[in-house]
Length: 493
Image (cartoon, rainbow, N blue to C red; front, side, top):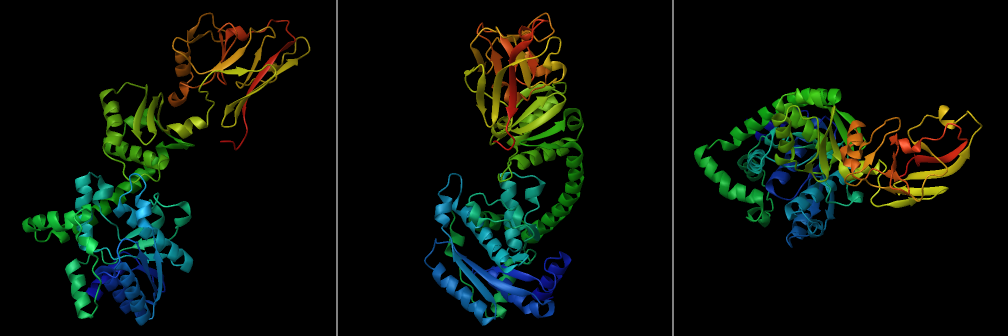
């Protein structure tokens, strides 16, 4: 069976390229991408594909100038359009935590996406082959991966799903609706080289493909030859394993999408699960939902490792009755809290921005206003009312407090301190402010800096926006008071 027949069958089986599709083909000048462009062009007459070659000069090798000219000449010889651009990959890799390999990957996919978007193409084809797939599966296995990683590369991937966070925003526009397809994914590197020889193609060889400082190259030239000595059919075996796991992943993903829709409550900067329902799930489903929650809060974080979920899952197993606690760090500012009856996964810094918070004591003017930052403020005024008609009978609101006119001053707004106690309105005794916060189920991440209103004698008058103190009680015959209102301007952040 010819390689073109296999390619046609693979494209049809995975529905990669519909007839009359406009396709951007990423071409480096190497054997895989050059053969792909040639093979797709050979099939285009029967499928009416409109092909366009795209080459990105990474600025890393002098010979790339020759490669760019080579690709442009080949495209012109075959009657195809071609786009060539240059990227500052070293500049991208200068960022903390971004390797040269990763910088090149992100720059390449962003370039291909931009070309596709400019041409109105919905498909970007790249030359990943069966040996690349074997390397990817082993690489993910060695680094530690779940099913999502061990399934390797998929034949069809949404380009918008790739995380390109090392690039400036203007270099990664919305790629929604563009598919990244890999037509060679079941074709071996040896078969591709044989195709090049039969068709008198003379691909350019990138010397960096032998550079052992790159992880993938060490796998390709040092590790995989040892494994092939044990299993000469290693590439095919790992390819079949990846395909099987892709099928399993699809089934599990549908199941877990249903669980997510049923159990996850998505709020700004917080994912909330019913704790009892979450605990009742098999641990595999718990792990998948937890990873999805992290990915939802940190969509540009590429690698969610084993340790990012297992500490919390161990806690839930070892302490099955625990319903309160935290923070439990997950990764990159994402924390978990047990807030009975919920399990909260929050992006801690952003989450508290949506709540009233204070970092240090502030004086509240009477009358006047005090900014708490992020649009939150306290406004005060002196108000009066007819006898026997106090305003709280008409406006019961936890964000409004009335204080006696002779309340000891100055009024201070501050975060909690060790030993703080309050006598809640209507109660005869005092309780720790921490206990009241727990009773009111305030988010744990926000408790340390939740504002307290304190009078000149040091009494806590108000857990702001939540519960007033008995010290705020007005005389029965009072006809005036200080009114304090907690508010936030819509849209402020």
